Length: 450
Image 1 (cartoon, rainbow, N blue to C red):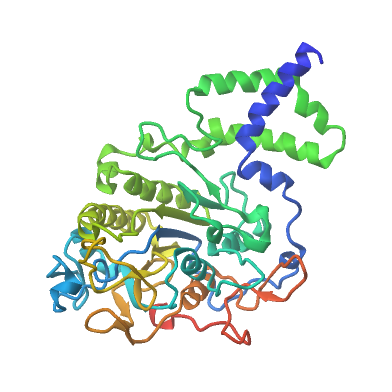
Image 2 (cartoon, rainbow, N blue to C red; image 1 turned 60 degrees about the horizontal axis):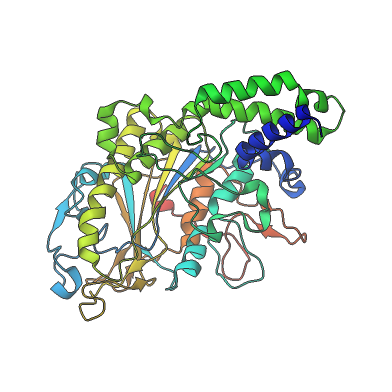
């Protein structure tokens, strides 16, 4: 091997590392699914109201009583130290006392207080909430983000260099992935920490590699002329790789890459979001949907509070309050809330009765019987409450809502046809829209909130 070829391969390896995420998979994950291409034009009535989704995933399962469905009149074994509820700017809606900023924004969001699926294990509950389907079948269904990537991403004419489905910052597990749709529709996880002095995005911002170094590397590649010459061979895969090289450097050095530079935002706004990973992730999500990214998930961990529940809530609720409230206000101020769905919740709730006994010492367990979810924007009406739990938050008292109904509502607001099918590797007829238990028809939508 010549020295020139060794240099060339080393540089291409570096580019390959940069491309190892979304751009390379876009080029080499195979063609768009033919079943998706054959679908009839998406023509909901009225037209799509939402363009993007920001899903705030409270991984671990937040307690409904300690967030969006407070029960101040319940016994202390249920409320713990949270013995009061905070009035909001909408009459009759009250939330946890540690969320004063969200209390000022209640006219922008709706609360669903009767979510239920009866599943008490993390992965199976998360799968149900993310797909709208029961676990245990032979198929692994795609999560909502992957379905949106199919219908609103590259196959649907999305032209952005930024991937159509982005997770801040770590993947949640298989239920957030593409299932039988395949790698083309998987999310791109940024890695890194947006609250750090430099947000080191996987494959885009490299630790210890300056922009000047990247530019020099690009110039050397051009001088070696490797991919350009190869792309003239007529091999479409080499041409695709050459285009990926161009796109990768645009992601790193061009305007597309600048979206990850939070230093472009004012210190005042960054402070309002909160100088922590969650708050800065909310700001990052706003920047991504502003650039047209269809689906962004913020994976906000730490809600699995079997022990020390209340000390943890005193740390996390102010973060959630500040980050989410500022996101809603910022989206509204920029004219983006009407076209952006914000969906906040976890895989289930937590036991209404506090587990004071050892070894839990004030913890709450998993609870899939009833829990709460917040939705805002993109066609969801603010200042509303749908459903109710009973006086102690133990059961659904009114209007049970299954996750599939929420997912169906999100799809409808995005303009995904209720009759659209998902391409299945075995040719099975599978609706994109979650269906009733017998599979005969799509689930009902949450018309009260739309």
